[in-house]
Length: 87
Image (cartoon, rainbow, N blue to C red; front, side, top):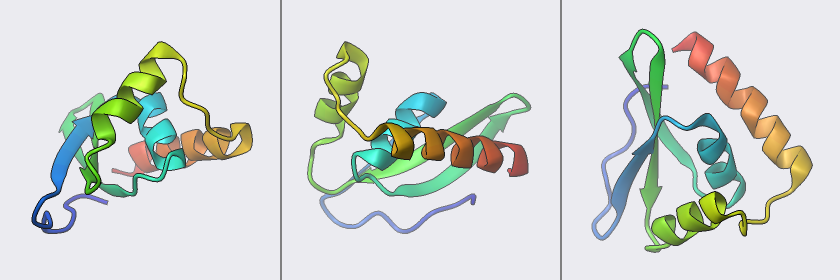
């Protein structure tokens, strides 16, 4: 799933190599916009922020206040792990 789409006007691209943050972002409504293998052992997940909420959601994740469904979070972790191994 390399590449991605053209960034719409007003949107910002954000990247993370943190699989758990990526899973939480997907659960919070951020669609995965692509992946890039940056080294043999590292993949970056790309997200588009069209609402300007990425930094708040990221902060909520790291301070423990982001709430997402447990089943959805677990499912996204599995999906991303499969994606990482196929890139």
